[in-house]
Image (cartoon, rainbow, N blue to C red; front, side, top):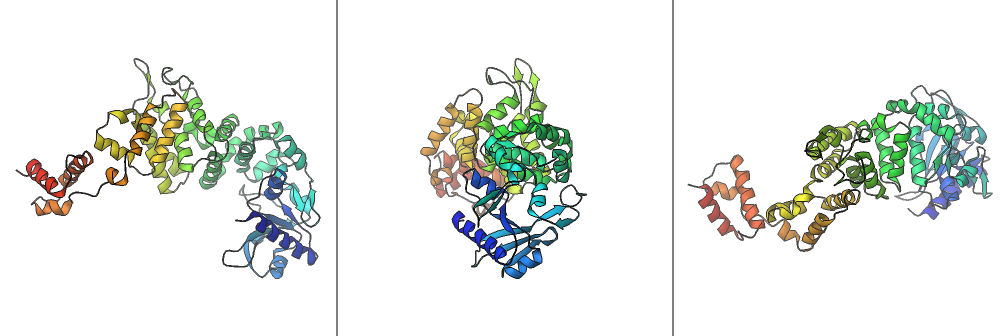
Amino acid sequence: MDESALKTFATEVVSKLAERGHRAVFAGGCVRDTLRGKAPKDYDVATSATPKEVMAIFPRTVPVGVAFGVVRVLGRGADPLCVEVATFRIDGAYTDERRPDSVTFTNEVEDVKRRDFTINGLLFDPLKNEVLDYVGGREDLERKLIRAIGDPKKRFAEDHLRLLRAIRFAARMDFDIDAHTFGAIKECAPNIVTVSAERIRDELNQMLTGPNPKFAFELLKKAGLLKHILPEIDSLAGVQQPPQFHPEGDVWTHTLMLLEQLENAPLALALGALFHDVGKPQTFTITDRIRFNEHEHVGARMTEDIMERLKYPREMIDRVVTLVHQHMTFKDASNMRPSTLKRFLRQPHFEDHLALHKLDCLASHGDLSAHAFCSEELTHQTPETLRPAPLITGANLIALGLKPGPLFASILKDVEDRQLEFTLTDSTGALEYVKSAYIK
């Protein structure tokens, strides 16, 4: 979307409201981001006009939250620009700890006081080119500080998701969190369990795919939030590893070092980095040395359980579970049969597997030989050599007089193995091989 066009449209909305005698200003994140020199992704307008008055002024509107004073104003065209317009309001009690039971329309000063953090409480009048700051947000931007507006415990009680939002904003912008605000986060941390799994998941996603996921997760642990939302990750701390393979320290330190290498990463890769060693605490043993036998298999099951708990889409769950399950396979790559190696290299989203393996190595022993081997192998492969058209099918086996059953899969895999290793190259030879090996 063209940010300049969106800003122009938002300014037109403010202007039309002003022409009808209503106070209107930009509010929230768009003001914060502009002052930081960042292009806003969207623009929100706050106004003295009621939803009914807003809908009377603009021909194309969507009443997305009239009870809370919110109307979406649309521009022209099939893919119109969109600005949310909200009436200045005071919120009533938050019985459900997310939304106010009632709202009372008010003025801009009182409206700002019910928002979450000072940097999100800034207003801007585009007609006068004037920043309006009633809560010290501009100073906090300069100080690089996340600070709750008013009493932080009251702000968090209104919506416990704000506990995570404070962490996300701090990590995204590389800001500190005000000591009083952070103290309230720690005190209120157990209340995060009242927030829906979907909302927690969405905040975690933004932290993981943001510019500094390591900082975000360090803050989550320091604030006491991690043990409530991801206890399996919280328990990685203190789980020692064999120093000859992991000189960096325990599993938590290792995981943070993976996250440290990520910046605006794809979600599947970021989740794979977070969960890849989640099975280690359950598989910790000491024999000749510290070992985590089968931790990738245990971790894959745990990852599936965690992601289902957080309501991730099935496709994303399957992708991340496969990453966790396969992340130890690279150590065997150079000793694989050619057919096994090709199957490994051709699996969907292999670029994520390769990237995760590199992150894992760089956060531990630093040996990238398996990564180099697989990367080199990929340069020699084509779609035809990795996934050639089958030489025979089940219909061919039936024509040979074989009865459909479990044996069919074994035969077809055997033939494909030989095809991938170039010992079978045509259908005639494949059928002759099946006759000699499987038909007596």
